[in-house]
Length: 149
Image (cartoon, rainbow, N blue to C red):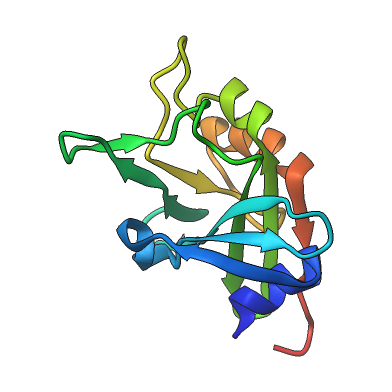
């Protein structure tokens, strides 16, 4: 299973703390690193036909059973987005502080997002908005691509 193999390659040993059923389409789960006990929210991004990049959702239900973005106060220290596209594969490991700065997590100042598109290094011919997004995302991307696939 490539998804969990990539997580293990990046983080070493880990245990699955919880599957996030509301995001099961993206294999949403929380993992705990054996080495230091750090808990990470992980997702497997999906390739879409109509747009370059890889799409992933991450949200929760509030007390009124409405979908809402994850919030700064309730979020874990890292979000890990795994991308597997045949031989091209890698992951983004983004710290909470960056997720707040980029408006992904909701905060007192920003609404937050329930889904984001990710652009690994192999994504080319992007429009200006996607290029800008890719520029900050690549600082948190590790390429695990193989030539044998």
